Amino acid sequence: MDCSLSDTTPLGDKRVTHDLRVRGGGGGGGGGGGGTEPYQDVSAMAEEKGEQPYPIVSPSLLASDWSNIESEIERCVKAGLPHLHIDVFDGVFLDSPYALTFGPQMIEAMRRCSKRHTCKILLDVHLCVYGPARYVEAMAKAGADRIIFQWEAMAKQANNNNNSTDDTIGQLEQAVELAEAIREHGMRCGISINPQTGVDEILPLLESGLVDLVDILAVEPGFGGQSFQESALGKIQQLRRWIDAKGDESHQVDIKLLVDGGINAETSPLVIEAGADILVAGTFLFKHPSNISDGVKELLSKKE
Amino acid sequence: MTILRGISLVCTFLCLEQLNALGVPRALGSSDRVIVSPSVAKADFLNLGEELSAVVEGGAEWLHFSVQDGQMVPKISFGASLIASCREKFPDTIFDVKLGCIQPEYKIKAFCDAGADIITVHPESTLQLGAVINMIDKEGVAPGVILNPGTSISTVEHVIPQCQVVVVMLVNPGYGGPKYMDQAITKIQHLRALKPDLHISVDGGVNEKNAPLLLKAGANVLVVGGGVFKADDKRAAIDRLITGVVPVVNGKSE
Image 1 (cartoon, rainbow over the protein chains, first blue to last red):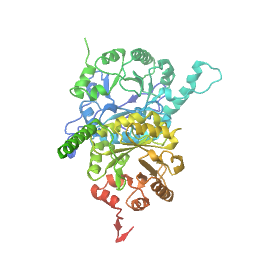
Image 2 (image 1 turned 60 degrees about the vertical axis):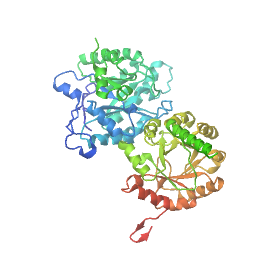
Image 3 (image 1 turned 135 degrees about the vertical axis):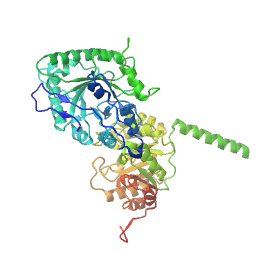
Image 4 (image 1 turned 30 degrees about the horizontal axis):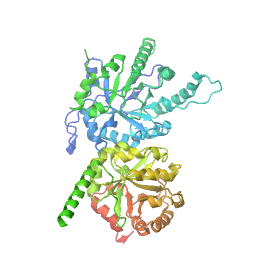
């Protein structure tokens, strides 16, 4: 993997570093057409200049042309977007016929693309399936950098007290077990919550230090054409406050806030202001009237 | 009369062109011929358009999309969005969609919209197979069933009259492993006798060596994998499958 995990540090001091600097692809591209100019990584370049690298845009490939994924990845990377978001849905956990997307084979193909073009791609796999633990090994082999698993897929276990807080204990145990398995396989770990789930439910998991990303879904996953739900903004703000407060304490916390669903030029300033680090955009970028780069500029430009 | 007939032929042709453009399912044609249906899962996902073009140009009439949801079959492969991405590139190719999904009744429409010309389902995936076959039929898509090695024909006999395709699996889907050749051959013979114009497809490690045996038993559609995609001369590889020519090695036929 391209990133390093500091997994031997005590709980609460889980620093994750990742280097998205890419090498130039000149000369190695061969006859295929891509890779004659170095891939630009905006966040790494900004870091070099001493600027705040976040927020960044992470393209969701769900909206891309799946018959030509190599070109689509090239388009993203050339637009300065090497941090790719892939939704792996099985159409079972999410009860929607459109929510069956891809499996490890597609992840493996995307990883091969980065090797072929000697560029570094960060592959975030959002695993929203029934029984996610089954796919950890396959995803690791395929080359996923991070697995973002769905909190609601952690089944609530029966309890004797009927105390609502006890319901989440079973979920927490499962989540911790899964997060540990993901990290043991050399991948980073994120947690995703759907619109119905409150931030409080996942705070104990964040306390464990096993996850370095929270994926706040601003639409119901698995169904197209939905509008951004403003309740996501409150969640981003709440998590931002929590992360910053933890950062003020003795141990460091490096958890990124990702928001996915309904991100466009109208909603992006709202989520950035609320404190989001990573904006996942799909249709807005791939179906942009001009090109992906212009789409990214629109998403990240500050509005007066 | 001739002029009228000519005009009606032109009109029919124009209508078919428009219908194709609208994505209306294509007719399968007769089962008297051997059809090669390369499995998309065995292609390089990085460049599906190119990979599939090469086999279609090499003589593959169908493209086999084996959809797996991790439940009916222990793998997740791909869904309607990938099929829809490919549909535009292959307007004349039959999209042969095998639904390895539970509760297909809730998924049929999505795959019809994505451009399936055939949808086959496992009888074990649904409580009422007949209803699912009806649904597929009503969409104008060719319905069919998939017989795992452990599935007997008796479970699907009631829907065979409506089916245009039956897929006979040579292996346990998603697991691979040893082939159930004898049982498959018996099933193929039985199916051919049951419905002479049925498209009988075989899937699961079909290659140049076992294809002649399967074709002789009565199968007419060969779902194939790496052998075709990796071949330098795809047309030759597909022709060999169609004609049932057994490859000669060291001067001996295998």
